[in-house]
Length: 292
Image (tube, rainbow, N blue to C red; front, side, top):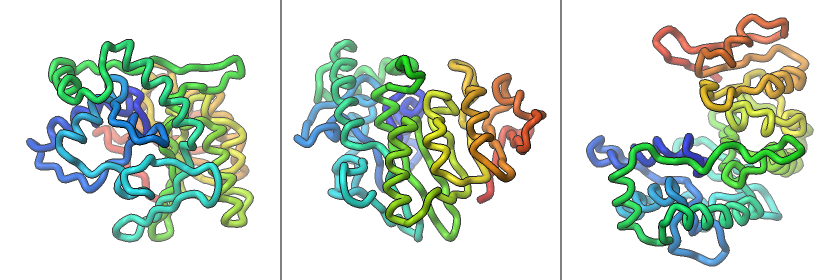
């Protein structure tokens, strides 16, 4: 789970409640909870959605961040040294690019404040489960926090887990709602290790649903991909932003495929444009399959 914004965590909270009824086995959960936001271990929980997910994981004693080093620690990129690489069962390789210590520290402050405003106490698993049982309309932390520079400064988005997934010759760059600057920093470290100027990747999931505050020229200059994925229906914030899509197109010298998981007013505009690209939408049954 990339981070604690409502549109990323609400489904997980519901799924974990129904896990036993669904007979769903979970090998390991990757999620940075409040206890992972400080070098000092903490039993504190997070604000609302993060609190609920933490309580459900603890209640069911599920494996949590066991695949990182050290096991049970934060999913994060250290300030120095090589970027973390995790070998997954079956052969896939995962290279972490975000978040870093600075983003987790910033989130810790926001998390504590949001928890207090919600009238919740850190570490009260019973209370979190009680509230979760009463509320299905889980409330998020709010909208984008944009600064005067037009960039995303939301602590929650900045803490997004982002990684490069490689398997059997194919590769995907999954960015969550990550900040363009943080993603670029992780990519530069990876590129330096591999001796590359740009990262060749089969598909890129654009950060933050295609927000212009996250899809930056700096980030795009470091990736070389023929395919960009946009996960949004545009209902709340009108994503993807036109400026973000245009940046993607400008960053490419060859053919590019824009893949949208919804056909909406904000995505349909790219179906027949004067740009050298192909737009892909779900089939009539709503299913969208991407081969890489």
